[in-house]
Image (cartoon, rainbow, N blue to C red; front, top):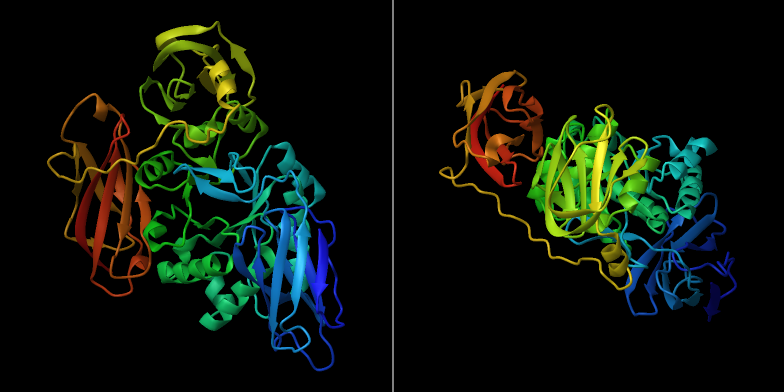
Length: 546
């Protein structure tokens, strides 16, 4: 990248020469005398070669140094028009020529539930792992992420005001290293239990901090995960909407945005700031129903996700924000993962498919599996879910595959694919070779095939186990296997909808934190999905008492 100054006075600069597209360009401004970073404003109206315009703000980098950072997303001539309250920087014009590179770019939501790169427009496979202390992480930790074929690393970066430039420098050093290996960094911007509001209690202070953080970090390949365990915050919905909207406004690259949950971030889909759902994948019912309920990508997280649990989350249509392994990466790369959706014409397993092209089944238990497929010839293989080792079968031709894994122990996958067709599809631009239409959940009580029995159904006591049972009212082949997701929300409050159960029978506990005033009118929603993937809702309006 070459940097040209037009009509610029004599002021110290640190030009960014020969930087390719999708790498950061830092322009340094040196303050002098009594000038301070708190009293200095420097912004640039940045215009791309394709006439897209956005604002970039300079940030304090320590001492008397301020930096204006941006990332060119296209090759060609970029123009920057500076505005500042310091006369020597104000109304200056810069031109930057960015050179082409093979970097795929940032990522954006595409094809309803999937991701692609903004530069290459190719699909992005979201497989994550966690390095919570990234700024001080060892070289071995970063190498492990690369070797495990992780495409995302999650970390926690606590807020403080005034900011500490040295802390940001340490974080940015690691982000640069991971980005260079094609790994994005998922930034959790505050810890649990109200850490954000404790560190930044004032709304104006929060705005200053997040504008500063976005100015420094948005030019990298990152995603935003606002707080950890959002359910531990008071007035969480209002807080996250304020912060999420602020980041959406000031991030010119529109990086993905969500929050890190105990249960799910489905509570915030309608608030407009969120681009994808993070949910706890330890129970496969959560990602399964969230994926079928919302037209957003789903990312599963968790702490106790075994190989089988990870694959069940994937088979539910979710990507992984935790638990990336080389075996998972290699198996998914052998599919058209960017078009796979949950598939239900199977027995003894959960499956994904691009019908007529690619089928991937996770075996539930030892024994025979069955898969209905379009009538073609398929390359077939059993895959060890832990190692990725393949046991090829002879070519299968037909419509109804029946088979049994090589052993009765271990975790197994079955792949049926038309490799020749897949290879041919890659020769031309095909990101969505078949349309995907979201279903509408059935809410008519006459058509919902189950009901819920609650003890003391009108007045439910907070923080107290409440016995319940979901009963099937219409037996059919489709209701032979049901998954449930029970959520609770007080609509008049801003606490957010909570996941409180996934079982058909037992007890649920309604957190007192759902409300600040009692008695509170609470909406209890039971979402059920049958064996064909059909979603049903039952809503119960009850009184929550302390």
